[in-house]
Image 1 (tube, rainbow, N blue to C red):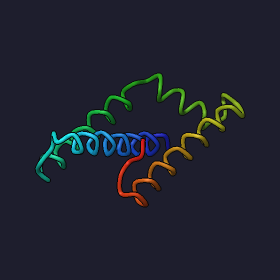
Image 2: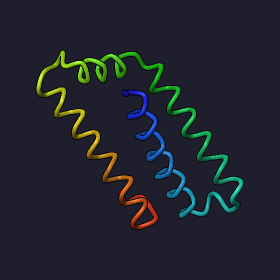
Image 3: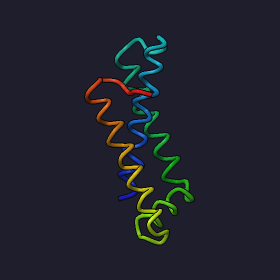
Image 4: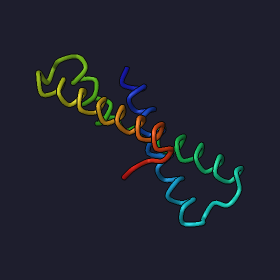
Length: 96
């Protein structure tokens, strides 16, 4: 479950980075944008998955070891991902 949270977060983060780079004129072609987006997500996902402190903390929150605060953290992270995805779908760009 925690891997889906990490994948969605890095996907939305990479979309934001690529949109900002495209708005600045750094990425002019569709292939460059696609390559930059995929590589950004792969690198950031691999970093976050291998970062054991984040993984351990998310697992502890999901398993209830931290208590109510852990569940609230997971809920707020899920709300952030849902809001971010909704902004991308509705406004066709990431709103920062």
